[in-house]
Amino acid sequence: MKYDSLDVARSAVKIAISSSRRGEEELIKKFRNIGIKTVAVDIGGNLIDSIPKIIERAIVSSRRTGVIIESHVHDGAVAGAAREAIMQVAAKANGLNAGGKIGIARYGEHLSVCIFMSIGLLHLNEVVIGLAHRSIPDMK
Image 1 (cartoon, one colour):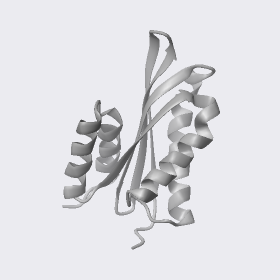
Image 2 (tube, helix red, strand yellow):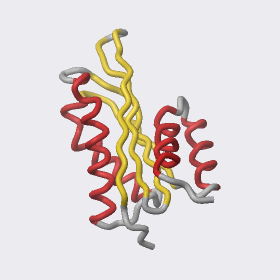
Image 3 (cartoon, helix red, strand yellow):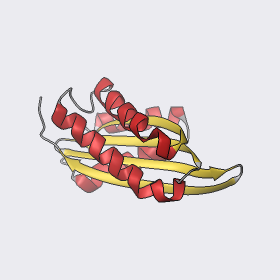
Image 4 (tube, helix red, strand yellow):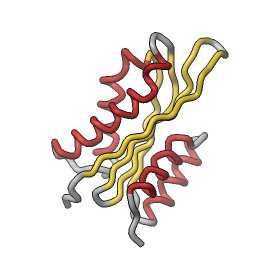
């Protein structure tokens, strides 16, 4: 079966919103069995100050798990999509702490990055989600 950008985006969202490590691992295995490569990255801290570190972790984990290959084109796609997803939620995070997860999914030329997190102070939290897509060459 062939999957399109919507299917890949749904996969990234499902990985990002998984509530436990076990659930995350089950989803990753399920997606791998149908040909969609996925990875999740936990993030936390002051979102604005952490942007470079979050992007770096997204790239490194994507490489390490085989979602992308080591290529400046693939690295740039992950970095660009991660940054775009972060910018979608950054306005609510200005100066506040955030904690959550980034889900990254890829099938063929489609790459999606989803950020799902809680932002706030003490127990006064806002829940936010950002999603971005990139097209990348399917290099083997």
